[in-house]
Length: 244
Image 1: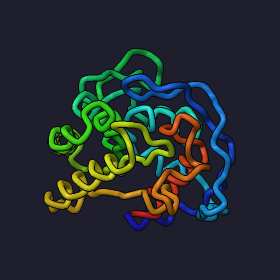
Image 2: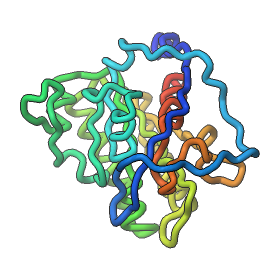
Image 3: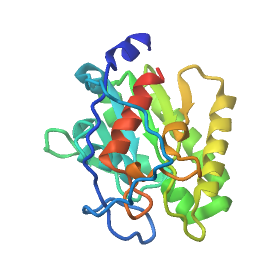
């Protein structure tokens, strides 16, 4: 773990902002739009010096929904290392098929993990569970998440697994807000803590992503309120690197 930390040296954050269109049902990425104006009360870590370490990326796999899909599409991550699909819920991810990096055919997640044997697996899932099922879906969410972790450990037993917290929003709407997201994150953190497995951990990203009002920082959020900018993805990568 420590050698990975040493490889994550410095990050030059670009202020290129990605966007996304209106949301219906499940959340998915989209075309560029305008980000909200900066909030003068927000503070940001100075990522003045980060060099994206190819060795680190080649030994890591990122699993998720449109949040991680945009992570790859923004160019912050190599697309071939990201297994993410728009609108997916936790219990559905192993049923999906993904294009092979070669472009020749498709592969399911568990087979990909068995083949690649990554040192690190990072998961960012749950936005769609929370949006569709609300408070009533928390128990099923955590059960599905723990089942996913068990499957990953079965197919790739040498991997360290990190569950990233569901990212906050900068626009709240009826039935989907940061209080709900926090409830999902708290339940997931508690469930992972109960595993008492040193190779499985929860990484809360709120300290960097949230502003003093408990909302997603303006620089990090697209105008749809849900999806993230390139600046946010650099911040997330920095958090990942500095957590290990």
